[in-house]
Length: 295
Image (tube, rainbow, N blue to C red; front, side, top):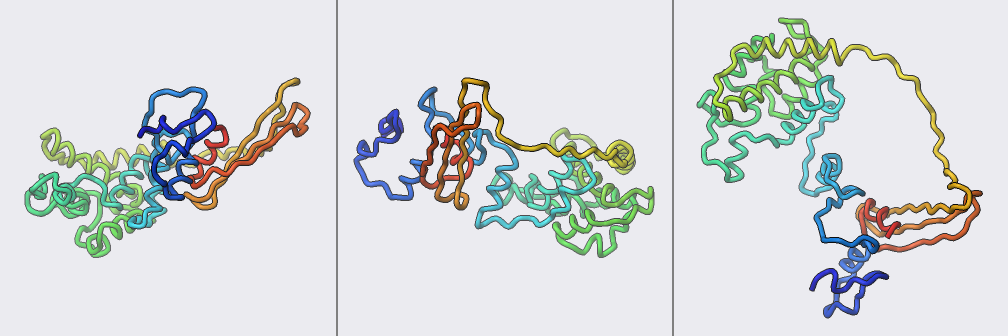
């Protein structure tokens, strides 16, 4: 049976289903919006947004609601003084979500997890960013004592937190360590990828390049910004042109997902009430309840 076999212009034809559907499934089907005016071929849509297009924000929210998810508690990442791409990279590192060989071996993609740079130890995220001999050389050149237990004696998440929350400055170039360490981790990862995927040699001048990038960032992005004048804008109902009527709709959900409903009101250009409606739409996510108001 296909979806079109029990669709009507007025809704769902439940009598066309030859078997009994569980009530929770029936409610979820009822909450699915139907485009009666412009039907076309079925296509995949992302249920986490009102427009059906995938975005990272909705995927992150979905991952946070997973019972098996153990999120990396590091709100400092998104507030850090660094480039947006580096913030995302640090967040991915904290969630063990970048493609090091040890992770690929666990997924059955590779059989060998040996570090492609030192060829001595298993390539974990912490090994790439801190413990590989070539990486330790970079950190030493940037002014960190790699034997310091505050820097060395911690797991991946604690190490990321320690670097990101430091308010001191590097001993070599007097640069804020929280900024310098984020650029260092990013460039160390990029160097690793250039060796693995492009067969490039190990860049021995990486520390100098990192310092230049940090100085440029501080000058261009981290300098004090001019304060913006705050503008207060009233949100109010805008009347339609004379002789027209306007329909306003909205939806709500008790929980996400949960029992959902929507409603609407029609008013003329003077704001006078013409008609209204309310509707129960079953069990849905919030975006679905809002879409259903127009169905």
